[in-house]
Image (tube, rainbow, N blue to C red):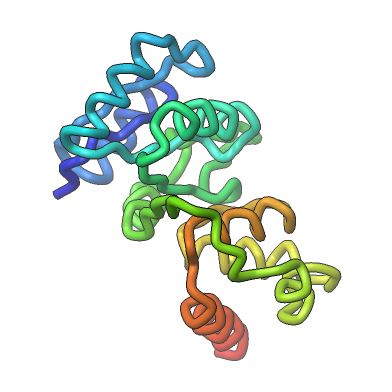
Length: 183
């Protein structure tokens, strides 16, 4: 059972997360209308029980996540990919299948205190995550496996380093993604 406070954007997101995870403690930001009072509450809960940020995989969701990250750097993060969160052109946590939400929480990430430079853009080129015909597809699969979401190459590189993903885990996940292709 998850003990941390889960931060989502809206009431429908909260409902979907509770359906997937059971009775968990959730607060919603009411979209980008995240107030200073709510940010302070989230910061206090982070000290007491921990916080997991789970916003929509879109621009507004990333902006909300960044506001929380700035105010509550110790927050953990769970990510859904855009494909899993899209239904009839609408992107949101509430659109994801329950198993996709559960899967996102199986790969919670926490930022490292200092930004490690474990990876460079050359690393991404060398394994086809940049500059190949299937780069976007590979980043999507790998981002899901590592729990860092799907992003463009620059953001993908930043998240690898920000969350301190080890080179060993990275290359193991690459092999698993490629092995899945061959099956």
